[in-house]
Image (cartoon, rainbow, N blue to C red):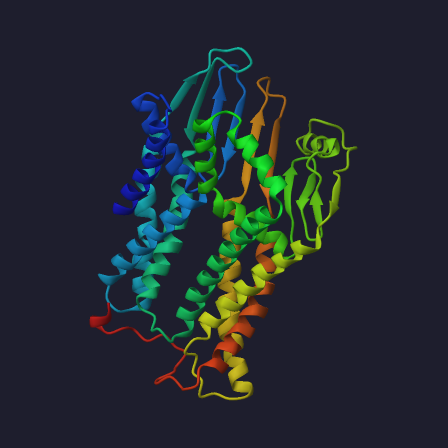
Length: 415
């Protein structure tokens, strides 16, 4: 319950900041908006119904808030596991049970909260009603809580030199390295291409400082999403726009879109089914410096492997050392791939619009394909993780006492 309260309050903080900068919202609307932000931490879709009969659904995760929720749930799972004894399975289950307990009040509140806005008509519908999708409000937070809480429960039972702990910690650290390096790469790119930064600043500031702060604040919440969109092309995949009729690639290795090209806008319409399938998106060769983004997955995988290879039993030599490093590094790489796949799905955005006359629904999804991206991350993670674990084993010069790869339950004083 404490995790639920913390996440709900985090959403309200965002709504309060908007109000401080001149939102001018009624108190009830401000509270409802804060709840919608909390739902967005978990990628719970928002249903939109217009007075004319048109419907829509928007799914997007504010992944800075997702990171906060994961941290809270991890700590909650670890705290719950401390009361469950010393058995690893029991502690994992106790930590994972945080998920359903966390999700139930989210689903209950979502079923009660509705927001109706009056736009005054004109080009927009006279009234718009918004509410969260109730089943997603239970399932998505529950899955997040089971994963994060279960990991928190497991960490407390795994000895520091154990193989399983190395897998978990190495894979997680590899993900943090990947997202951080992608963000740093984009900052460097902005610095070396000041004309793009200047254009962005003009667009952001064109409607005054209040709107600029609102845009920049929301972009900060989406920084992890941005890193995931960059990570996929850096591993050899594509960030794409997919619809029911077609798919167009936006950023792929070696190619970048020409954003000013009318053909690109025509292809966006084609993907959504609003234009004939005749346009072809215009792209251009990627400048040579962009290939430096290959360092993002490479360094992330090496970091994952080095962490997993720490204290891996350095008394082994020759093929035995390499085999042990391969097991450790490949395990961390697999965890890294699972996290990248899940994060890529969270980072994407999906929107669907249903016509008022019931003639059909247009759907669009922006982001890399999660399964393909996870497979690419698996290849990078296993290769780089194995190398990183082997290098770490070479760096450590003394064997670890009791260097068994099996997890050892901690003593009561250590938990």
